[in-house]
Image 1 (cartoon, helix red, strand yellow):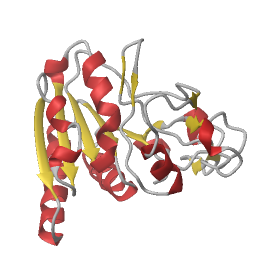
Image 2 (image 1 turned 45 degrees about the horizontal axis):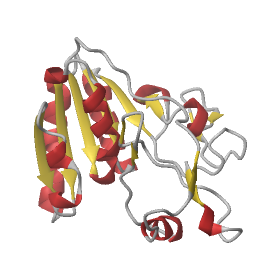
Image 3 (image 1 turned 180 degrees about the horizontal axis):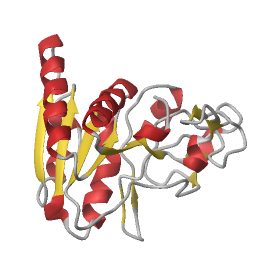
Length: 214
């Protein structure tokens, strides 16, 4: 979670972001402007002060010997950069990236040196159908491995559908709106498989796909 000092009382809550990369000395976030908060963050200049608290919640499973498929939709590519950098056997990883904006807008090309990779762009309805079809093929190929997904809810919902069909293990990273980040404000809750509400910030944001509603 980050909150610039310059916001004052105008914007009360901080904004949550996946950690794109961290090396102990620096923290990299990959941010898309979608509202007032992210627009104001984009206007920050070098030397401006921000409050940062985290990391919060959990992260994707790491199984070094398991073939692992990473499904990234748009800005959902953010957490996979750090995942790739920290993974002990990146040769077991494959990144599938579906996007709408030009690929140069993302950090995709900086992530693909050590992993197999594939990208598809969505510019019309036919592209979307091709992406959905390819996701189904890939998830079936990795049904005995580990599949990780981050992106828009419809993207993750499609991945969940295929994973359930093929009996694949799938984790999803939810991007619910968060306020406090510590489970107090209840702004980010979702329903789990027991029809109970759980806080995404403290119980997630990563969930096994069959244990949470999308």
